Image: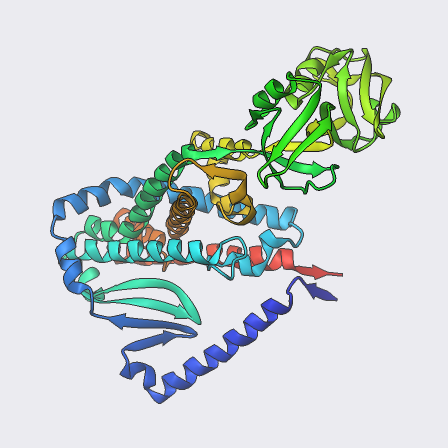
Length: 497
């Protein structure tokens, strides 16, 4: 017996798509589509226009400039091809050996790079990013066609119920005429869209990471045991000290015997001074559990050394040794108490077996939005490793931009809320261009990577037989790629009982 992970919204989407497809078929058979210069391939509509061709001609004038960029960028296409095909093979291995369970990341709707349907891509910012990406990609193909002397018959939009792409329609006979074009010229034309997507992604991300420096982070209440203070509240200052990170908190805690907290909503609270680290979890079988430490307790000191912050706690624990008997001062059920435990081993130092959830200050567990900025700023450095590139590919699963609740965790130093809007635009323009460029590197016809690879293989094998071998190889790779993508959607969402 089988079951699926498809919900009502997915079923309705399938029904709507089926009705749309039926309408396309009716219009095609009546000849209505042809009258308006629209063609269809199954449910996909291709709407053509000759508007914009004069602008295209003007932009393509500096031919040497465009040829140089396209030639230099071909290496990036092959690197992207190797990366993406390796990713496909790794994905296949995982799907067959350890298939993931149904989750938002494996939901069929999130396999589509369509804002509003993909739940990780916001509608407005995603739509801006997608439009920029499609225009850049297709216009680049068209520019290189004109640079190499190939006629562009039309520009257009691809619809499959909603816009899913754009296209430039070159004269295919001229494009594939071996007497008119050399192979390197065709490779430049096929590579142009990918290269332009990568260039736009680089520029957008460069601006994005630069502008992150103009955001002022804050201390955030992650867990509140104080009446009138909600989780997610922003703390402006403690004891008159603006608190942005752990070092600011330590300065604030050194002042006075009470805690005065000023919140962004205007509230000012005076609380009894209690500072330590919040226990968010206790590992079974480890010393902390045996000593009776519970989730929600606060560790105030270890061996008499205060641990007002997570950094202080880590520093103290790094100076302990395995099998050492430690005295831990707790804030438990509203009162202080000491417990003893024999520490377990973690490397060369002692280990309690607790998971720390943040800095605890007088009933408030704090987090710092600056850590999000730090993780984002570290992305460029991570690209020296393959794991960094994998992280960038999956970025929207971790971070969807500066919107909603996230906005209140930062104060723009310039431009007010416009800084958030600019950052969101840059983020999604950068990521969608990057992803679309990578996807098109796949060695699968009709993707650009497939056409580039076929040209190269034809040059290697040569002759009519070589053309047949090249076509067969690329078609086989295309079957592997698209079957892998289909299986990556189906396997996690079909359960067999």
